[in-house]
Length: 113
Image 1 (cartoon, one colour):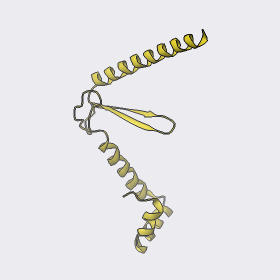
Image 2 (cartoon, helix red, strand yellow):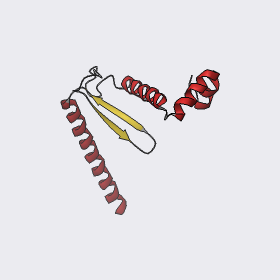
Image 3 (cartoon, helix red, strand yellow):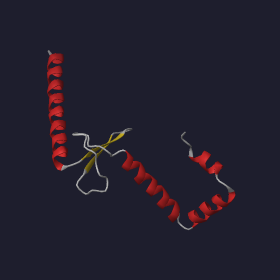
Image 4 (tube, helix red, strand yellow):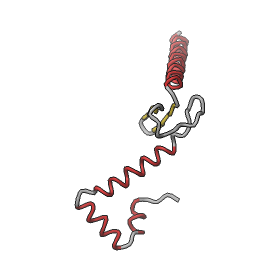
């Protein structure tokens, strides 16, 4: 079940609310850290497999790569286990883009006849 922020605040005990208020008055250092750690945990959950070969990715390794795609209302993430998988993905993406451009040109030529 997903909670809204207001529901979470309403579910807190008085002493927890006082601690949060005190933390916020002091700059919210502890609250910021908790939120940052939670975001990190969520990001690790979604990056478990290479999107090209399906290899399991070690999230603590420095040899894996991630691309972030940020459209107006959708954010997507693609993870890769090695540089060759990333290169393959980028080449395929470029080929698909070129094919789409060719289709669009042909469609416009037919439309203008």
